[in-house]
Figure 1: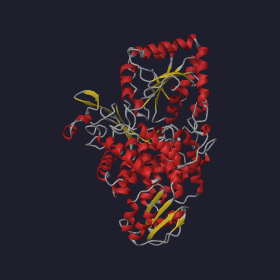
Figure 2 (figure 1 turned 180 degrees about the horizontal axis):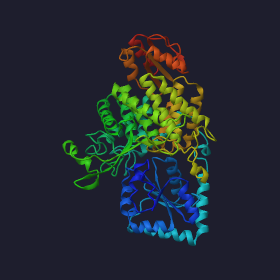
Figure 3 (figure 1 turned 180 degrees about the vertical axis):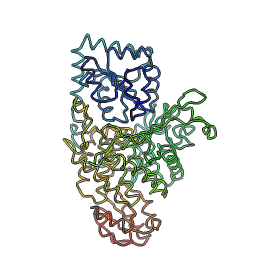
Figure 4 (figure 1 turned 30 degrees about the vertical axis):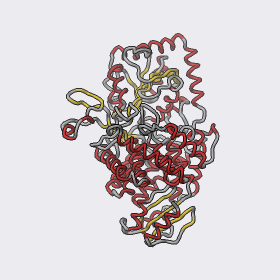
Length: 631
């Protein structure tokens, strides 16, 4: 049996290398082999910190009998969903035809042409109640393939046809960006709120950081009544997420990071994996909460500081990039258990190995971390956080940005994955670099971000944005690629992250092209987002920013700690861009084509509101009064 996973970039794939299953990595080869043998393909998708993926690997994929059964009647493919998000999105959409309990591990049976005809998630080694064993599933699928082939192929064709329908919201029409849409979305969230324990819905319960960010965006300067309601809802949810009932169950008080989700309504019994994307977005959320809510400021700052301890102390790699996740399981007293490490005190932990890190550097997720650390460091006065963001940005630009302007999706230890970058990589990295540019005053980061956005705009097919270099070639050849997938949830989609980057470019004076692109995307997605705000928080946050009057504040000062500079950093308002630069940095931005910085040649505060610029201000009280007028 060929050991095809032993040298994979993905730690998740390498963890399956010792299985007796004859795994193939994602690519053309397994489908060619399936066509040669005329057998179906099992596409098994997971990720390295997925608890039930580990369980299924130990219980099922380590079983020689199951391995033999797979070898006889199937070709088996193992996929890391973090390395291939587009593959995961395509098969996740197809799996929705067979089960409502979508998640990972995701096991999809497909034809040699890549069309799904059956799917499920975790199957136990022996039947439990109404849940069949994995062996029984294999028997049923193999029987259907041989005895009822026309029915199988008809099902596969119908699902493939359904997936070819537009996915970017265009089929649902478009909506104008106005307060009525946000009233409806906030009302839906209020109805879905868990008023006893905070957060939204029942168990399992996720922190849904994009929803908190949307509420904080609305709370920053929407109509007064709604601003208060949105800000209060965000503060209540944030307090429960951070504190838990009765203890800080979802947050590790020693290392500061948040776990992925809790299995109970009261935030108890978490699944202990700690994801880069969750902690990055929550860092931004608690930073904004500290800026907006005086009563919440002290504890929100404490939570934000704890998250940075985790991001910089645990997740940042020697080259500067951020690892994708930390495992939920660790080996304590010779036994591998979920959450065991986090039950220990500081002294006890020092004697144990911490849970393993998935050291994959994912371009998009690093963009989220870069933006969060830059934003938090700028707003809360921590230069070391901004420096950590700068190190990560330089590492990703140096290692993941090719000479032709396209991006690498993932790497580990300097080894590059062959996986195609997704639209989220371009959007999230561009957004993060723009946040870093405003935090540091360094226009070079904004220029790189603009080039990424321009490439995505130029690559557009039927939508506003396209993936530079094209989508995954295997999916494209099979006709199963999803163009401009709008799906969100735990973190922004490619579309919403690109729209956010476009809003920032427009505020920096990049030109109306970018705002137009953001508006086109958001208007097409609002019919999907407004009725489902829990699933479209990032889209709604961008829409909210677009609905506000534009305000731009540039403080030109050789002293980054001048009174004017400190005031600029502390103020947060939806639709407001604030940046502190030296005269030389302002000239660099202007020379790079960012019109906001033209003529900013002397030390002063320059405030523009709805494209009407006030005279330069040098007095702190005068600037404060002017900012009060714009919110």
